[in-house]
Amino acid sequence: MRNEHPKPQFCRDSWRNLNGEWQFTIDFGGGAPGGYQDPETVLDRKIQVPFCPESALSGIGYTGFMPTVWYKRKIGIAAQELEGRVLLHFGAADYETTVYINGREAGKHKGGYASFAFDVTALLTPGDNDLTVRADDDLRGGRQPRGKQCPQVKSCGCEYTRTTGIWQTVWLEFVPDVYISRVKTETDYITGQVSFYAEIKGGDPSGQVLAAQLSFDGEPAASVSAPAAVTGMLTASVPNAKLWDVGRPNLYDVIFTLTNPDGKVSDRVRSYFGIRGVETKNGRLYINGKPVFQRLVLDQGFYPDGIYTAPDDAALERDIELSMALGFNGARLHQKVFEERFLYHADRMGYIVWGEHGNWGLNCGDGMAIYHFLAEWLEIVERDYNHPSIVCWCPFNEVSENNNPLKNPDLLTTVYTVTKALERQRPVIDTSGFFHAGATDIYDTHDYEQDVQIFRDNYAHIKTGETVHDPHRHGQAYDGKPFFVSEYGGAKWSAEAGESWGYGEAPRDMREFLERYAALTGTLLQNENVCGFCYTQLYDVEQEQNGLYTYQREPKFPGEIYDAIRAANAQKAGCEE
Image 1 (cartoon, helix red, strand yellow):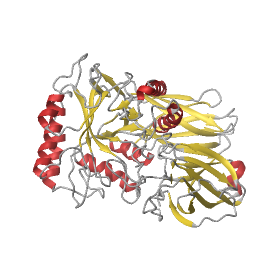
Image 2 (cartoon, one colour):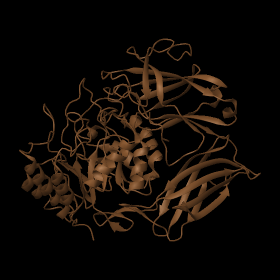
Image 3 (cartoon, rainbow, N blue to C red):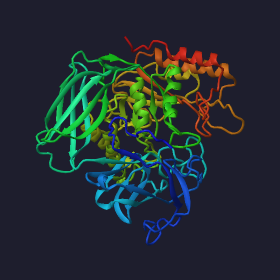
Image 4 (cartoon, rainbow, N blue to C red):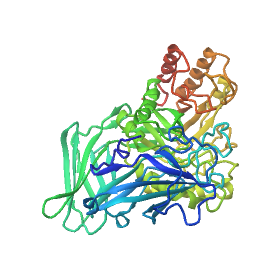
């Protein structure tokens, strides 16, 4: 049922999980006149939230196109819970979501990946209340990012089963009239200074004090406070700061409070942060002032029984464990915004990741593409800004002639520029693979060449001002930025009978698979002009069977093959000190 707190980096004790059995119906008419939002209306099916109706875990398992779906349930509210404010949170719902309380509209949100919340206090009454949710989804219209959800009836190639409606936890949060809405955290690994930028909502904070108490491993580390009405910023200096790093996940706990003039704490939020710095220079990616070679693996975030939603919290942690066991130090979270619980595990395990949007399906040549993309992307960056595991933002993947950015040349540059205005801690890639608009902090390429010698020759000469081999960019000149092969490999190796899909010609046997893996990976590690790689992929997803594990996360190879893969990944990189 996914009972754990969905937002580990911003926890209050006063919350209620709304996952579980809801009423449900598929509305093939795209919205019935009068609507299902009438509190007296009973929907004809049952669904297990937060699992999408396409999934087995939802209890529905319908995989056809659903233009509109409706959800309904009762929520009991005590009179004392209405003394403050009640916030209704959605981890994510795909795509356009309208929420009704007791038949009245509470709010609307557009975007299938960003989290959102509504203040529903004024619509609630003591006792049972009717909560109705409508989700509209049209992933074939070119006006919404859909990621790897297949626009065809059945999954094919590298696109998979769709997700419609609610797919992350729904929950209530009970807060005081004046409350801490969010806190943006920035750190300086050189000085140990930490700055908190708090957003306070709900009313006049005059007379209240905002405070932060920092601790490490249960021991006090620093504390700071200021009048809440004067400033939303707190700055603390942490003596002998312990840095968050790859494989060394030092995390500080922090408690934020609002205190009334009478000394009573009115709001209390538990959080954590890591002190670390990320920058690019000299053709390298640096973490805490030292070059780090990104040994990444592609992670799609799909599950056989839950599709977009992990069956339980342990499954999120398990994917990171599988990756680290093979010597990868991180992942490219591909064409999907992962839930915060995954990022929490990455934070506490010292696992670096890319934050990426699921832009596939958006017609980038449309002049309205910026409208359909940017608002949700900024919500995503804002939500995940504080996670130390995220070392790079990448709003787009493989923007190419198929969706023609040349008809809309300012899209990538605008999104990059706005992201950089918001982001002061990480590099930003305008788009991974195919087409750079010129505004990017890292130059990357996708190359699924399976012939080792050709692959090696492709990157033998990486020099500023010269054309570097790129199978998709048609001879775009390299400009001296850190060079990253962010997709390679992808060779099909199926552990099951039947049709499967992968890149290039499949190896003849396990030995050839291993030789190819080791040679391709070694080529990138030994090239001092390459700052990282990302191998495709960690596990199979449906018919795309080029993973290092099966879709069920079971081994595809005997132990000695995995030992050899780990050894190949462990080679010292040419760019490391």
